[in-house]
Image (cartoon, rainbow, N blue to C red):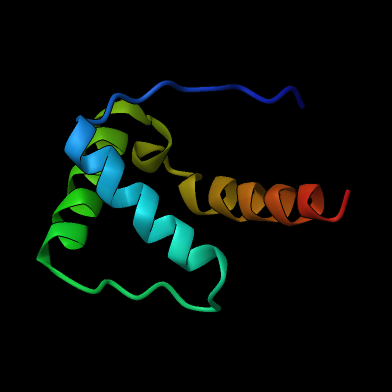
Length: 78
């Protein structure tokens, strides 16, 4: 299966906040949302993804999600 890509646009503020949140997450085993700004940035990103992706509305969404997770894990072992 070829890897498809999507493009999302985030505001500069959301990008900075999410960058730092994810940089911290890279060194941790759990994602900790330290404040309201981080929560809002994630909520906005979720909204962008929700308006972009069609899979969550499809009847086989859970199977597609399961397959996507398996592919990501497999790719991390390469």
